[in-house]
Image (cartoon, rainbow, N blue to C red):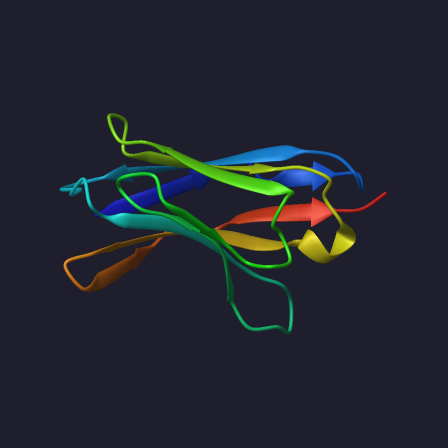
Length: 114
């Protein structure tokens, strides 16, 4: 399994950005997919997850601002990020969990700054 994330960049506070992550290899429909992030000097934290049937879970810090979705036909997961804050600046990683194994992509940098 390989994960390729894209969509990061520089955005002003209050702006929006959408991340995408395409998974390749043998992907089971019940795989849990999601996003985590790591800011400089901080631990990596979960941002959002989505089950194969569309059940979602969010970190409290992003509830109401971020939305995770997936396209099972394309093995792709998305993260729509709205009302971005400087504290959202981090490297965002795509994750996939299936058969008790966790896979992680290379990360995409999101910088929120004026």
